Image 1 (tube, rainbow, N blue to C red):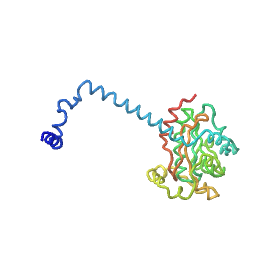
Image 2 (image 1 turned 45 degrees about the horizontal axis):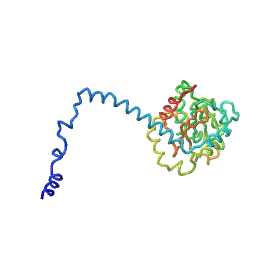
Image 3 (image 1 turned 135 degrees about the vertical axis):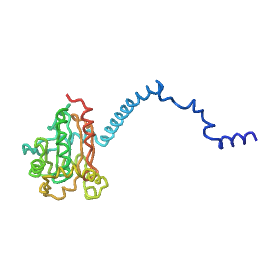
Length: 256
């Protein structure tokens, strides 16, 4: 009977009768101890945020090995500034130089005009940090020149990859479903005003003559020398890497 009474008491008694009294469980928020904890809390949150950023960087490059980076260095593309071919490995210092490499879908993609516009606005920040901006698009040089003149976009940062060789080396997505039906593409609706502004001088004439090229997806990469710091493949049209992520990585990377 005593056992039954104890069980009944345990399951039927109010929570307050089983827990410590309020006088022992309640913290006085005005006490010096509580206020010292409150002052320290923001510092702990910042430390955790940095840890999450570092883990995200490591996760983003997990699918790429040094062989992929070396293979990219051997890819030849065309400079919109000189109309001459150049290897990827010659675009930035392969020892310590930091470069942001944006691979646009193609020069006639209206979402890529918006991305190019955003990158152009961020260029002073990249320059002040010693970071080189490189934008590559699928298409011929005449298509690249259309984007550069109409947007406008700095020629010395723009390159053409007519045969999407760099895209193949990096394993960027390609196909009808990715281009037109991927759920990730709904993000473009949240950037309507930004896209509208970027398309002020847009012309479809920048679209590649080879219409199969419009099925190519792009991506964003950050390098320090030959080390890949950040990699992101666009899941669908308009699914671009957040600029804030790129700037955070560039700012965290010491540049000589």
